Amino acid sequence: MMAEKGLYYDPTLVRYTEPYMDDNDAKNTGGKFRMIPHFEANARRCIATKGVKTVLGTGAEGSTYTHGTQGLEFVALVKQGGMTPAGALQAGTMNSAEMMQWQNHVGSVTKGKFADIVAVSGDPIEDISETQRVKFVMKGGEVFRNDLTPGTIGSVVSR
Image (cartoon, rainbow, N blue to C red; front, side, top):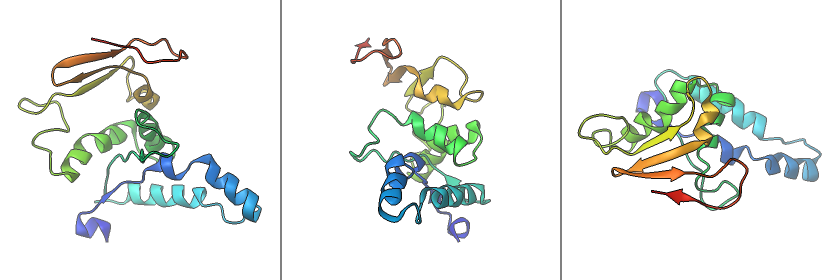
């Protein structure tokens, strides 16, 4: 029905498969009503359904999944949702732009579109977890670098 109606699917896997959900169930029901395996199975079915376009959700509404950690969602689309790394990247760029009807302005690196770019050190097609290691962001032509050494605390942005 989603494919027939041209609907998009936003599983927001990280937000809805947080470990505390199973912990709460284990505490309250002895693990009888674990929802995470059901949610993951449903996400895989929806993602695999021909004609349903998956988009990348954030779930960053102030819960334990904070802004700036959306790289986790790319990884979840691949590891939990069964997408290819290329499919996950398209979910977060082209598909999301199309869903918002902004595809003429954002979603791909194309002449005439806004050129906000995220750079990582490696190839996210080979290792989707590269999306968690952003080295710089170009926003409106200005470069913002992440010069932190992995594992350090604080916030360093140089321009």
